[in-house]
Length: 121
Length: 412
Image (cartoon, rainbow over all chains, first blue to last red; front, side, top):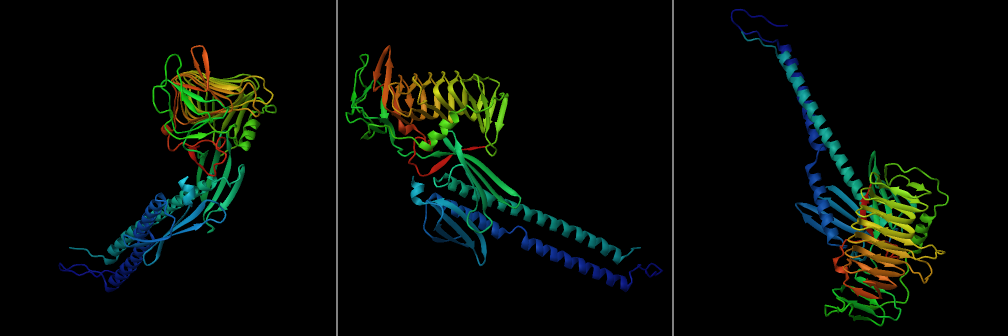
């Protein structure tokens, strides 16, 4: 495979060897890029984590203030839609739903709360 | 001479790239799995919180198990259970998704129907007398004949204000306790068909399992080496004696007579039909409850006797179905502090320097000075509802009108 040149010349690879090596590198680089993109796009999503934390903060703050009216808030570039709905089966409880969105739906948070009257007791 | 081998080098580089990419993929996958698990646990905890609110409502049927999807999405499954545990209710929640489960067991206390009440004395057409360094802070439900300052042993009432709070008229009868709970407590006192078991040195039982009941037909002595924790009921046909140094946490003692020796510290509920005697310097942590339910046919004075310098955080309750001449009595000795409620369908005897940080409800009050007994007198006694914790929760037994309970404490 190798050409042998004499008289102080460098031993070099054949053209076939170089082409094979380049193809091999191309394939592995391509595979690497695919893997890299997949990990970064589907792994830990910073935006979603931030949305989750902020949603919990918004929900807890509103629960503490005993707010029971639908709201739309904007915070740190995210929109939060807060809605309340009376639970038809359970007296004295309402369902609180908080949705965090940017251009896509990032996080949804649902929990039970006591109605304002019950909470005051 | 420089050797060159492009294929060889490119193979090594390719392997390195594959290794790096594989590691990245593995790290990314692990992070993703961890993040999903963390998010799932968050969701399960949140669902468990929502389920607790359902259990604390009075529309959830006791002694029943319910499996439900909280928000109808198909991914918020919880298993709910509620049953009675002495004076309180026990809530059990299991919230699950895939193979992950969050389990919570907790006691449910009742919100007070009247948070301002400090004294309820039934109207027997006799006034209440107050003397010495006594102080009443809160709303007092008194007989229509009212309250007056009085001299006892040559000492008058030291303050000018008789009551720091409102005065309201009381009824001729005590407010009724919860009938269903009385029935449950009376059922616990029926021990005829129980087989005898040996009391081990240590007993621990989770509230997620069935109740562990140890019954003895003879006197039961709970020695200083004994430890019991959780879902455990110890009962006896005659007497249970609790020695200081024994460790009792959240357990229930059931017997006609129960004696708690001087110096004992713990957290327990006691249900007796004859008497409960608590020694000096005993400390019962919150939530504890001492309950005497007098047998209908008994011809003696049932009651609770608390020694000197004892501190009880919880409820003291004495009851008889039909009013008799020998009404039950709750007697508190000097220096004792009750952080909670004293409820007696009979006498409440408050000796000097007793402090109640909560409320007292009784048909009659009693005070003993030297050898003399004074009825409906408060002598050097502090009744102060303002010093009760704002987070205090009572038992539905004494607050049957309350619609919603609260989280009393977590148990295992």
